[in-house]
Amino acid sequence: MNSKKLPLAFWIFIGLAVGILVGMALIPANIAGMAGKDFAKAYIKPWGDIFLNLLKFIVVPIVLFSITSGVISMQDIRKVGAVGGKTVVYYMCTTAFAVVLALILATVAKETGIFSTLSTSDLSYEPPEGKGIMSVIVDIFPSNPIAPLLNATMLQVIVIALLVGFGILMAGEKGLVATQIVDSFNEVFMKIMDLIIKLSPIGVACLICPVVAENGPKILGNLMAVLAVAYVGYALHAVLVYSSTIGALAGVSPIEFFRQMSPAMLMAFSSASSVGTLPFTLEASERLGARREVASFVLPLGATINMDGTAIYQGVCAVFIASAYGIDLTLGQMLTIVLTATLASIGTAGVPGAGMVMLTMVLQSVNVPIEGIALVAGIDRVFDMGRTTVNITGDAACAVIVSKMEDRKAKRTSRARS
Image 1 (spheres, rainbow, N blue to C red):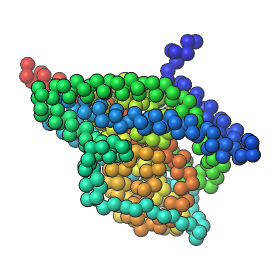
Image 2 (cartoon, rainbow, N blue to C red; image 1 turned 180 degrees about the vertical axis):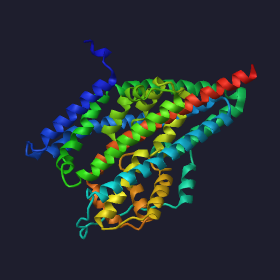
Image 3 (cartoon, one colour; image 1 turned 180 degrees about the horizontal axis):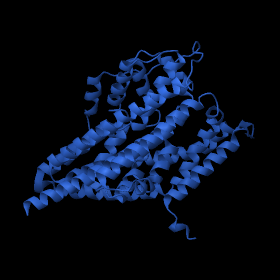
Image 4 (cartoon, rainbow, N blue to C red; image 1 turned 90 degrees about the vertical axis):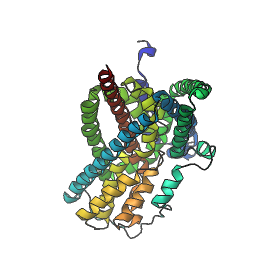
């Protein structure tokens, strides 16, 4: 069989399988006086880090130029507002549903004895410094145009892209040269992205191998129950919410949706980075019928504020940690978790480990000791792989749905005018 005809998802899956097998083989190994997991960290993980660095390198220019190009192509600032409104509503609704689903699953696990009281006397956890809601709002708006690009502060990059796009639209004919420059840079970075994506099977293998080598025994330990509940929540949310909304609101077959999304989902699973997976998600969304100008706006926004998988993780872990301390959460506390987790998703960066910060906020909101995070911190990476996969799948579903809705709206307007 001609290897060129095999889809990228196949090669990414092969890379994932090879990385897992090598990682499992390294668990009991001793190479050159080093434990297998140390060897994986020292000599295999750096190659995965190089691949991840390349993805992070391309993300900022892709977001900056693709959103700016998308705003310009819409040719109407009001249209950008309409797309943004639909996007935020979809993200908030699916995130709230994710938390409710997680709380139901975790409560069932608690009542059936899967979650139980544990020894918590020697636990300690230093919470990250939190921010007030007004500080979060202020931080969305950049004080200079360079720092957000250097630090990859995605919400600020999105704001810069929107402002530049709005400015070019308002400049009219005088903005034509700027339009050509933006479109040219957008195309150039898309081509660079294509080159980087071709390295994904190797990158996936090198990223997943040290994770398996280090966490293999822990995955099989006492925390298998909370992992299982979380992953059941991930799968149910993807099947129930994304299949139903993509079919009903976009008219796309759920099977076709997940088939086209498989390369992006595999990349998200291995890298645990929504932002790093953005190039894959963008390509998949376009194959599913999303217009580039819509997907270029919706996906970067989703990589920053859409946290369905993270919300499931928070709900499950909140109940698990409360159970470990012998605390029974009331209905009021569970509603507080839903509200806190949904609102906390805004402004959380799409990078590995961001869910731990949000979990701290959730536990504090219901007076559960944050030291309990130490129970799950050791395997947070394993949680992160699944929740990132759900996050980017929701981003793509929203991009396709909003794009199809805008297409139908344009057709209605056209018929009304004729």
